[in-house]
Structures are given as structure tokens and as C-alpha cells.
Length: 497
Image 1 (cartoon, rainbow, N blue to C red):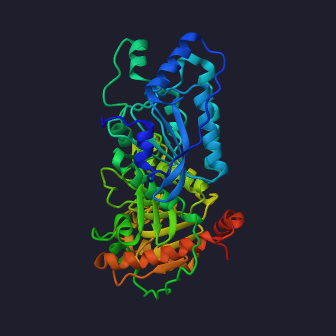
Image 2 (cartoon, rainbow, N blue to C red):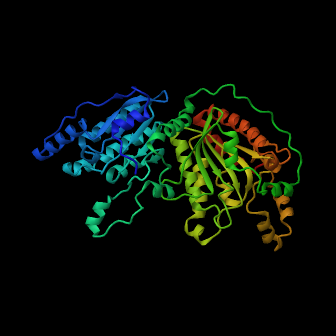
Image 3 (cartoon, rainbow, N blue to C red):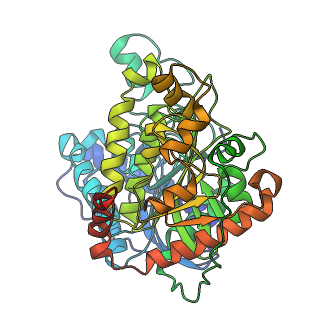
């Protein structure tokens, strides 16, 4: 565990020099016991602060931001009525002034000296955070050692992006309370930053000296929608040769074919990886990130061919991660970009018991009704419901050898012909290739491969990213009031003459 920084030291480290301005006013205490008054006086003497929370504003990399931070040396960073009121007012002011909000909790939880009235303060803090997020404003959280109890169970767990100190104790129930209640110690290694990251509950484990860089990069994407995107050139529309369907299928399966990671490496200008569902799952088959292509920002959801194996195919947890990304796009008023590249979702007992069918259904329902502009890239294989779950967007772009099928052509051959030999014929008959998808109104635009993305990965990804940049910028100019209705009409009309 790194040395604990005070709230003021952390603010000085994260914000630009001499840019912090306090929003705090002295608390007006209600009737309290002499013993509690003495504890407060001692805490003030020890810290130089009048409460466990500091609030204010400053600049981070030149960008104006609001900040709320706890001081652990002030009664273990506990939240009572006055600190909750200070925190809530700061969140409300940040919302009113349309500022991104940075939070740095460190706390043992509710202040025991104030009892239940302090406990219920978590409701109003959570309500203020929810209103801030509903206004489309970023809320970024840096969890510090230790953060437990009501703080972890309210404003500590509501971030759009959440990172934590290395080795920090993070959890709902403090280990000392657990031991007192159950007469045994809590297992080691569970309530740590690293374990929470491994279980998809936080987005990263970040040392103090890297916090400003990570948060500033995140805000570069999250606030980019406020920039005016003009004169983004529309790349020439490619002429697509009439390549046989089975050749496209074969080429899409080449191990050398670029996937989402190389697309981001060669094509994106900013990438902040996120992690997991925030609810205890992380599936390597899906990559979730904040990203920009040129000046065009998005929440990025990409099926990762490198993370999907026969032993670990795309599972229902990946689709729950995708639904987290959909919520982020709606809350932050950012475009959502999905990338389809999967040999198929998991077919297993675990997938059935994990709710695969239900997650596909919920992805389809969430995506087709999402209150945000949406873009899909059909990058490679598009097999079955796992692919369909990320398809219903405002615009669909396909790589030339990308394709979409109800199930692998080999599976279709097994159903119809009781063998695998007719897979090429089934692929042709089902109209799975990009040219057929465009003709049937499923795909809007095809990006050429010359002749195969596997042989020109960097050039292909750069060419593709130019198209994505333009498409995202064009989507951001659309009237948000009609986006969802237009999308619903698009998919209702598919297959009708």
C-alpha cells in the first residue's frame, strides 16, 4: 500500500498549480454531546480542517473541474450530517455550473457518533450524483485506502469511470466489523483494489502520480462532444469487387486479420480502457473503452478476437459489459460504437445458466431504443446471436470480408444437409457477405480490403478509421429527438419490399 496522501496533498497533486479554490463554508453544528464536540475539536486541531470532506474547483490540464475529497485523519473520513451537506452542495453546484466532477473518497463509512440520521445522508448524496449524471456530466472516482461502508455503498460506487489506489482496502463491510460479528477473520485479498479489478468492479489500479494523467485523458473523450465537429471529410466510397462469399468467410478467419486492438492502435487518437460490468464480471471476449477517432468521441464496445478462444468463447458476461457501455453512452450523451467480430457466443451449461439468451434479448432491446447516436462496425466474423446483439444501430459499416450469419455456415450445413461439406453453399444461399448485406439494407457502407486486411493491417485500419471518424461526426450532428424513432423505423422496415 502506497503512503496515504492527505486530501489537500492529493488535490495539489492532481490539479494544476495554485488552481484550487475552496467552496467550503464553516459547518453550523446542531446540538451535540460534549464528548463528540471534543472529538471534532481534536480532529480539527490534528488536520487543520473543519470537516472530513473538502470541496471546490480547480483546473486539471487546463480544464475546469469540480472536486470532492475525503480526509481520513478527520474521524476516519466518516460522513455525518455536515460533511454530507457539504458534499451534496458541491455536487449540486458542479451540476449547475456544468462541471465534470472528480471524487476521492476515503472513509470508514457513516459517522457512528451521529447514528441513523448520518446513515440516511447517503440517500441525498446518491440523489445528487444521479442528477449530475442525468445532466450528461462526467463523474470520475478515485477510491483510496480504505473506503468502506456507506461511502463505498453510495458515492464511491457510482462513477462513470472508477480507479483505485494500489493495495487499497475497498469493500462494503469493514473487516474489523466482520470479525466482531462473526468471530472469524475476513479472508485476505478479497477487499483489495487488485481483486476488485480482477472481478470487473473497477476500471483500473492507479498510483497517485498517474491519477491526473488517467483522469485528464478520460475527460478528453468524455467532454469532446462539446467541441464543434465541422469539416470532417467524407472519405471516397470504395468500389467493392464481387468476391465469392466463401472466400470472404475464409479470409475473415485468418489469424493475422486485424481485430479491435489493432484498430484502436492504428486508428484511434485517444483510448482509455474500461473494465468489466461494474457488477462482478469481466469477459476477455469484449473490449470496452472510451475512444476518439480524430476529434470524434465514442463509447467503444468491441468483440475481441484475441480474447475469444474455444475454451473461453464469448459469454453472457461480455454482453452485460456491453450493456454497461450502452448505459454510459446514454448517460454521457456520447455516440456508442460497437464492433462485431466473433465466431459465436458460448454454447455451454455455464452460458445457459448465466442467461445468454436473455442477455442477447436485453442487448437488442437496449441498443435499438438507446437514447444516443449509434454506429456498428462489422469487422470480421459475425456468427449468431452474439453478433446480432451489437448490430441494431443508426449506421452499420462493414469491412469487405466481414459477414453476418444466424450461425456458422458449418452449423447451417449440419442442420440442412446433415454434413459440413455444404457450408460454402449455405453461406452463399443465406446472403451473409457484406455485398449481400448492403443490398438487403442491413449494411450502409463497405470499406475495401486490398485485397485482404490481414495483408495490410495498418493501412486498412487507418483507412477504416477515417470512415469511422466521419460517421461518428455525422451522427453527432443529428437531431437527438428523432434518433431513436428513426432507428426503430429502420429495423422495422428490414425485409419488407
